[in-house]
Length: 275
Ligand code: KIV
Ligand code: NA
Image (cartoon, rainbow, N blue to C red; front, side, top):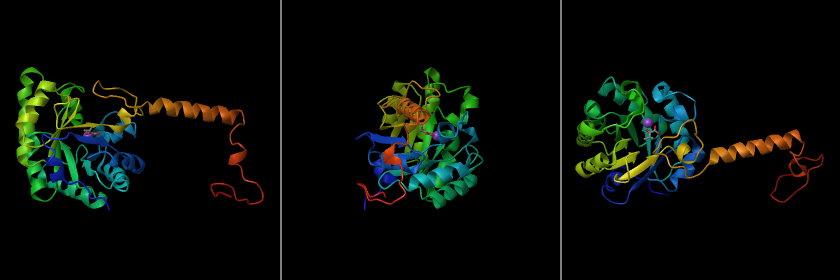
């Protein structure tokens, strides 16, 4: 029996060993990342990465619940966090509580994540006071892509104060960690030094208390576009393409299935047990 990490365990990393975080949307991927990650996020990026949506705005609570249930079955050690999708929390604290409670009850996740800084502080406080740990997300918040006019770097120049206020507000509201997305390195360093909770960077430099990436991005499985902050640790998309092409060739040339994949009329015991 492995002891699962808790929000207080995550907070204890502040200023220490960097937190390792990745997304997962399925049971097999959850099993792979659970062995080495501190936080597994069921991100609403699932809409773009697995469902072909043009942004995260079309992701529903039901989609998040289904993927989170799958991920839950693959997790033992990491802290599992689930994104609250667009439209499921912005109306106010009561709406946010109702939907976050549903996420926790139906998926067994230990915490939720929502986007927004000062404007969400009251909601974060409301959830935390009622037993729902919250991870915040400031800087580039993809659910606000239409107000930003694109996936632009946030907090450059005079805009830095706004992001700093957002990070400070979610920290004081009781969030146990905050994702800092696509902000300049100097700002990420300043925020990380200023606030009490761990900063989890994505496109926010190594000055943060941890890092997160979309797992399909870093494995080269999602290739529609490639943000500057993504490092490809593998090219699984290319390898899958090559494997599919090899299968197609072998089928067309009747080289697959081979003798070892075929059943005779009489059962026979072979190595590996399949008769
Ligand atoms: O949805 C997501 O995957 C995220 C992370 C990239 C932070 O919010
Ligand atoms: Na997200």
